[in-house]
Amino acid sequence: MKSLLCLPAIFLLSLSLSQPALSQSAGDLYKSKCQMCHGADGKGNTPVAKTMGVRDFKSPEVAKESAADMIAVTKNGKNKMPAYKDKLTDEQIKDLVTYLRGL
Image: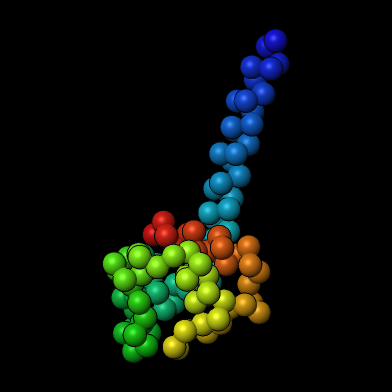
């Protein structure tokens, strides 16, 4: 009976340990692919952003976009933003959009 009680705790521990790894991976992707234009905080306060009209991820306009909309923009690009469909997997793009929502 004691081992059955430990199973949920082990399961919960494994879930909590897997989440930071996912976030770190998405965080690394953000730093390497997005941060130069969108800034560390996602507000688009960078020299590149000001010349290219980069959107603030925390703006009400972006906040009301669905995850599917953000995935489509990331995959296909928009205006001066390049497409990442050939550079990132679908899973990486989904993780990245989840990360962006948490900035």
